[in-house]
Image 1 (cartoon, rainbow, N blue to C red):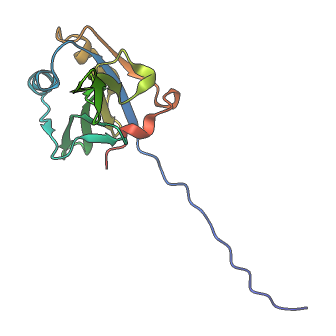
Image 2: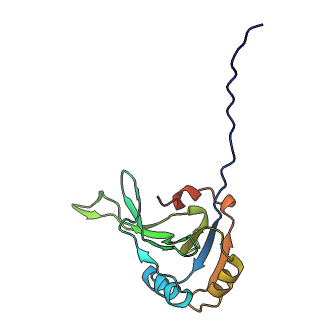
Length: 160
């Protein structure tokens, strides 16, 4: 018999962080939404140095991103706009003159076109209590928790 050495690789499960996604409906600008979240919920969301940018050959979409890291509870909060106005980079021929193409709207999460903003929370918190506080804010016409597994373009919400 031969004495062969067998190496075994044991894969331990890596615990996934809890991630909550909350859809926010509001006609306010994002900076006003963030102001109300900060003042009413005790957050300290600030605009990040970089927005979420999607560059296409003919246009660039920019979605403002706000972030707050709660050191005490080890929780990351993000607020991002779901809608962006885009102006194409090319010119359109119009008679004898060239003019800029019309702007159009793009979506960070295209399958949720009606949602104005997303609040992403990374870490386990008391989400029911948090949702109730959000629903009591008169600045939002609707607030609900999204099932992340049902969003095909969830990769657009990975902010690293």
